[in-house]
Image 1 (cartoon, rainbow, N blue to C red):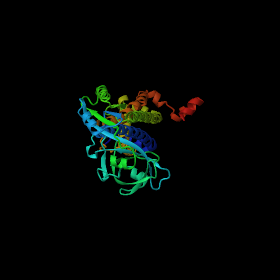
Image 2 (cartoon, helix red, strand yellow):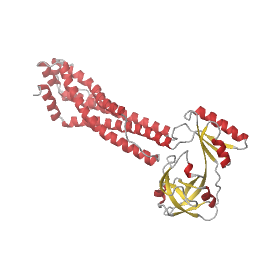
Image 3 (cartoon, rainbow, N blue to C red):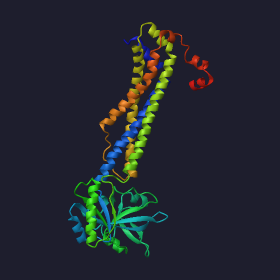
Image 4 (cartoon, helix red, strand yellow):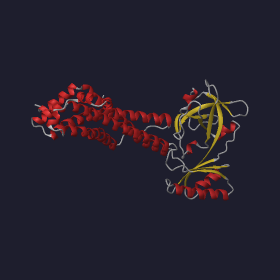
Length: 410
């Protein structure tokens, strides 16, 4: 048999389903917001770093006038250089079937597809490596231009009529953004294919990784400076040097800043939901001041009364946390998948969420509403018997108050 005070608590819940539902909904919404952004933050931070590092990004990129096989071999043997790779880039236009204006097409020139070790791309469909006279397209380009593997596309070089080249396959390049309407389409070809278009197929871009302290930007700069000096001394002009932040995706700082801002907003949402819960609970307590006075008259202690209402908040917060966490974690995984696949052109390898996230969400979803609701609960339970019994109720206080206070009360 339940004691009288617990039967009273259950009856209070049954008599005020609207207020109880409002408190559960408010707390669940706050927990859901926090769970969505916290899970998104952890998943996107982990998966962005993993996808980017899996491509073996270059420690530095140098632009030279021309890179031939002997020079590349000498660079690979240079002290402090772990890997070196030469490539080229040409810009043309693509007159895709069903499109109005021609799309910009960037062709990456690769002399040996089987020797790609830096900024690696992954084979998706079709031939690998691409035969001479054909193109490999980045995987999203087929959807954009409405073509299929084996079909031919018209490539305009600005010199003469457009030339027709077959699509031999598709690849996935995580270092590139997804193709979208009006944006650049990316393709890969051999030097022979580019030369057949009447374009310069020279390899000018040198990508390299260092063997010592590859995540230390100072060590990278020192090694690259020695290499650049050696190149100049041997008659090879270095036109440009680019050293990106080691192991960091170009968009990672921006993405992390936006996610951190949204995470703060979700924390504020949870705090406001806890305040709303405490406000609703305070309204219930004002209506039940005479009941509290009666309980104290027949022997109820302050701790028992406070524990009664704190238990109610604890139970409601537990239910709300379970609902909010379930929905929020699912939303966080879905949001992360959209960002990774459609914005960053990455693959979501895992949707796992660290255990500390679960503990943090449970603690925030249960303890925060409990702590804030404890303020009106402790005030109500501390009322004397005389003050509680002689209370006229919330409605009487409302209409007896001055006009501004009555408006705020309503």
